Length: 640
Image (tube, rainbow, N blue to C red; front, side, top):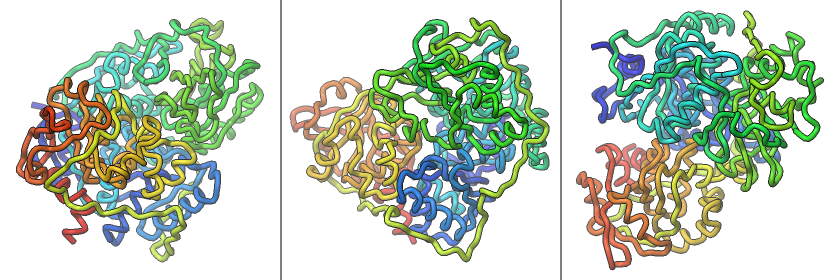
């Protein structure tokens, strides 16, 4: 029986365990990627674990979220990240150089590598035939110290591509089609492997767009083969020596097969406020648009920006519409400038922004109340734009640019013009002047923004407390710890950041949690989806929250809860969720530590001492040991 490409890469990097579905394995990590809002905690944890230096081949910290540096706190955090990276043997990418996933794929990623990133869109690397996985910061810190990453062996789903994209259809429409079919939960526990004759028709930037947004499916990762087109793209980047041909065996067996006919793909759009709320663009055509933006790690490559330049060349942005283009890297815009093509953007009335995550996380270009924002981004969670009452649509750069010209959402097939044709230039190299290399003599700068990660005590025998809040389905990590400029500036200080925890759902949550000195979060389906930010779990531990009882969890957030000693339970029967009310007293019947340590798969929870329900405990032996110890950092510090 043949092997999938996922199985091949995991087998090559397996440091322990059995490569069987339902089992866990330890995966050796070749490369590590961090960014400037989640990276500080990673480095704080790395230092707390007293590692001497970075062990993987490549470890890069990118200043890409807080690029605008609204005050000195952000600048101080960047100085910490630069000096701590140098001191321990990592690289640092300066503010404005570009978004982590874009710059990393331009400069560092290699086919066949394993990459662990403190950002959920690390799946982007699958466009190069590399296995990129998003993880919580503590897991990334351990990987930087040379420890393997423990992974639940994923199911491998084959996405068999046939045909070729035609006309105005784009790679963004391919992933929107998958979201339309499968939903934001459709990929949980899976790696999506793209196969078939249609693969060769997709450029590497197009592949990266698709791989990037498999995160919105809840997927563990995504993989395209490394083939002739991969080699050509690496040659353009001046890194052909990194090429390695990789593909699944012809007789590989997959858990599931999904067929997508690229020639049948049409322009699609995700309506507010979830990436899987997908319909054909034609269904919402005519909707007035106040703001259009192209950029982010999904659609900010040279290919995407050149597409926009071709569409707006000789046209003008509608008078009632603002159009912002934020290239994902300086390399992208530098190449356009060398070609003399930035003139078309400026002449059309496009506002070129810095290379930053920026608007995607509400850092600049916040839409006005009661306005429509159309974005070539990956997420449109309610309030993520910085406006809690936003109305954000997601679409391809083609749809966004065409709509910016017309002033309303438009199906570009209705335009009286040919679709843009973009050819990648032969030379896509540039200087590395804005990437700072290791310097083991560097003094680490620590400003007031750099806090400490508290050590949680061991899991007690008795856990009892109120239901502090009751949340619904699809609560994102943006809801748990917001990504506004005010909050992100204190993400590296857990005590200060705790003041904002879950306030988008319940503005009094931090006060109630501190007063209760314990208690529970009760939630619906897919709790903790979205960003990998470990703050969403860490801050619950800081506030003394005992655990979360949900219908089910997103993968990374579940792991983060375990890492910080917050007990994650799931309802054995969802009717119990309906009965629980905020303020109810919840207690576990029996010795909690003994139950978790002993392998209990279900525990009984009492409600107000009036009725009980069963909660499931889906934990590996290693996770049980971590929870009993009070979280992974507490566990490791005690073992030292």
